Amino acid sequence: MSRRPMIAGNWKLNLTVEEAVSLAGEIASGLMRDDLDVLVIPGFLALEPVALSLSSSPVLVGGQNLFWQEQGAYTGEVSGPQLKAAGARYVLVGHSERRQYFGETEKTCRLRLEAALKAGLRPILCVGETRDERESGQTEGVVESQLAGALAGLSAGEMAEVTIAYEPVWAIGTGLTASEEQANQAHAYIRGWIGSRFDKLVANSTGILYGGSVKSANAAGLLHQPEVDGALVGGASLSAESFLGIIQAA
Picture 1 (spheres, rainbow, N blue to C red):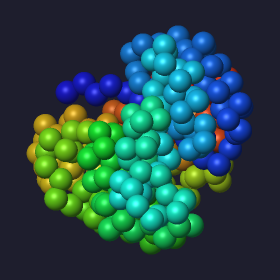
Picture 2 (cartoon, rainbow, N blue to C red):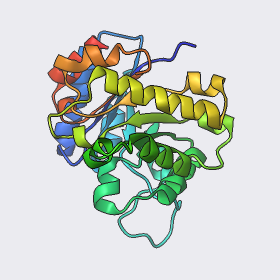
Picture 3 (cartoon, rainbow, N blue to C red):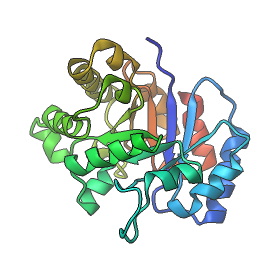
Picture 4 (tube, helix red, strand yellow):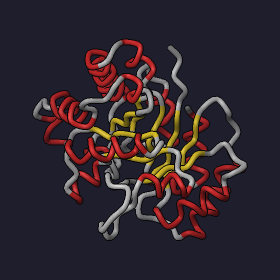
């Protein structure tokens, strides 16, 4: 089954509103392809201005995180309905930086993923192992635990709205990148797990992105692997030239 590729840029804690709108405009004006989805994920303050600036463009907008309650006394949090109203179509769930710095767990990922689906957002669930876990042969066990926890209780129909991003923690912001074979092998394992948890049709239709020091120089090799359906790009998405280079390499 054919899966539509996606190149997503996670801007993390970078860019003012003005800078974010400018970057979004550069990406939209330089986009030369219509055979894949392009997603930008700005900070919360820039989300609505960026979405408005891209309203006549095919470039999609997503949120970096969400809380599992829709409203209430939760100072500093952002809800799914708020993201949707601001123009988001997608939202990241369980990014490794959220797990590392903010105590994200399989349980809270499950709550956030459910909240995203309820709000009509398409969650991108991030999974991946640390360097110590990979070197001790725990990659598959760690990834399985993260998948099982976050996707517990989902129906096949709900799973159809979910994208997976495999992001080996040891390759995020380090300059290290999984080899093409390592990336494809991890993606194949994830797809096989989805097939066993749901069915082969769901597995074959689920998009699985690779994230971890993706650059225009290494994108082609990674993105042309049979199990890799696109990329979740960090630092290289903060430059229109480098991000568009990755898109062209896909």
